[in-house]
Length: 196
Image: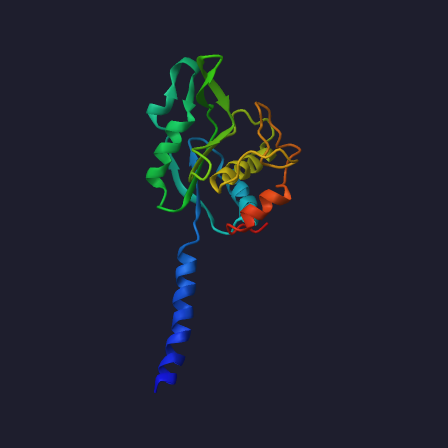
């Protein structure tokens, strides 16, 4: 009698385990702000999908928060956008916002607060919110690689000193020639479910 119960419950345990494992795989939700071209955004998402299976372009377009507008430079503060995006991101998932507006961050430079224009930002290493702007990117073909760079930060990667997509841009667009992750960064992302 005990053997037949064990035979019935073991397969059921495997099914339950498989369901639980699927539920734990986070999704990357991609949102567009304003006048981002949906055809282009769809193309970017399909490239991301080659690296990570659970990515979804959301049909709902978001509005940049008024509180993020930095009037002196006529651009939007990225950290404010990142905080707002958590409101539309299911717990445990990732969110990335795409905008054509100029974004920036405040940082200290020579003891003074400076508003610095940027291409993209993740709230912190291992954070779940990223924002990307096409405003400073001259070649649209570079945008998906900028997205991969910021998602790399979201999945725990720091800037890398190797010839790698995770190199610090240092105020320049390096995505024209850095289009892949180095072996060390690939291994880290592969362990987190990336198809790399």
